[in-house]
Picture 1 (cartoon, rainbow, N blue to C red):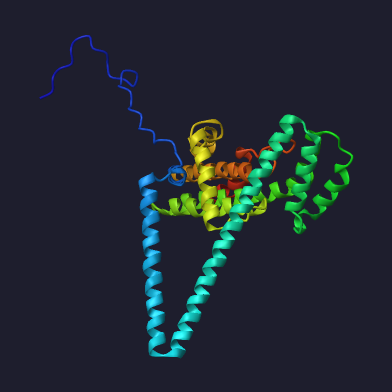
Picture 2 (cartoon, rainbow, N blue to C red):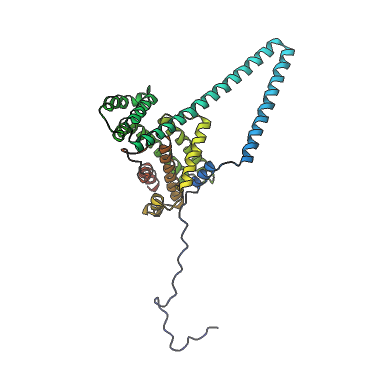
Length: 329
C-alpha cells in the first residue's frame, strides 16, 4: 500500500533529494615494504638471543670440525692416498676460511677508518685547526691513492692545499676536488636503487616481491656507497653498516611517511593519476632514496659543507619520472 503524501509537503525535486554518500577514500600509500625493511634491519637482538646464536654457532662448528677430523683420520687408516687427499682438501677449506676472516677484518678496518676521518673533520672544523685540517687532507689523499677516478682531484688538491690558510676553506676545497665525483657516483647508485624498488612494487603483484626487492636493493646500495667512499665492506661489515644506517633513520623518524618530502610525493597530483600500487612504489622509492642519503652521510669521510646534501625530492624526481611516465602511457 502507498501512503498518501501529507498535505503541504513540497514536490520531490533534486534540491530536496538526500545527499549521495561519498565513497570511502583509499588510505594513502605508506611504503610498508621499506618501513618493514627498516624495522627489521634496525632491530637489535636481545642478550639471550645473542647468547643462543653464539652458542649454537659454536656447537655446529665444533660438531662439523670433529666430524671432518674423524672422516680424515678414518680415511688415513683405510688408505694413505685417500687420507692425504682429504687432509689436503680440509687444509684448503681452513685456508679459505682464514682468508675470508682476514677480508672481513680488513673491511671493518676500512669502515672504521672512514668513521675516524669523519670525527677528525668535525674536530678540525670545531677548533678551526689548520694543522689538523692539513693532516686530514693528507689522510684523504692517502685513502684514495691508487684510484684512477680520484687522480685529477688528488693532484688539484695537492697543488692548492699549500695556498689555503683556513681550516674550513681547506676542507671545503677537499670536498670539491676529491668528494664531488664520488658524491655523483653515490647519487647514481641511489637513483638506480630507488627506481628498482619503485618499479617492482608498482608492477609485480606479489605480496612479498616488494619486500624482497626493497631488502636486496637497499643492501646492495649501501654496500656500493661504502665502496665508492673507500669502505669496501665485506658481508659482516655491510650488515653492520646497514643496521647503523637503519637505526639512525628509525631513531630520527626519517622512515615515517607524512613529513616534508614523502607527504608531498604521496599526496601530490601525480599519485592521483595512478593506482594505489603505483603510489606504494613511489613511497618505497622515496624511502629508499632517504636510506641512500643517510648512507652517504655515514660513509662520507667529510661532512656536507660546501657540497650540498642531496635533496631526496630531486633524487626521486630524476629516478622515477621516466618509470611512471612509461607506466602511465
